[in-house]
Length: 144
Image 1 (cartoon, one colour):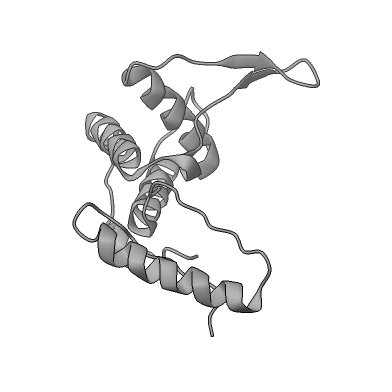
Image 2 (cartoon, rainbow, N blue to C red):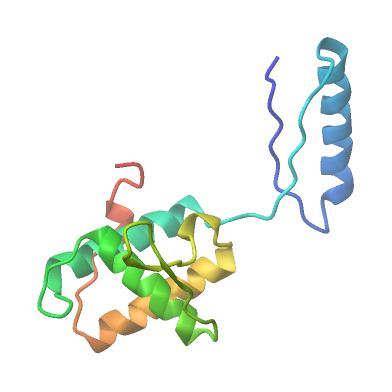
């Protein structure tokens, strides 16, 4: 028997999913003294992640920032920081261990689906304003 139960739940299916979860928990407790249950909101999707990284890759190949070529991760930092400001947030800075300035930016891994969609829209708009040619992201392997 599998030791994992993972389902998406919404207002329409909550009773059915919770019944399945209850039964699964009972079965696990027959063989284990203690188990763990996690309930959380859905974060970004695999498709959103693939699209984000494909877009950042296209930008990294085509554009410079302050005259320098940047990596995908560097572009991600720039866009996440800019997106936070553009959506009404504030930059949070700190002095690092070696006296450097650090932007304590939002984590894309922790973004929900709506927040990630907003970031992708922000990057799309920037790309349109800066003549970025985005490739069809669906042609990329999301796990590479």
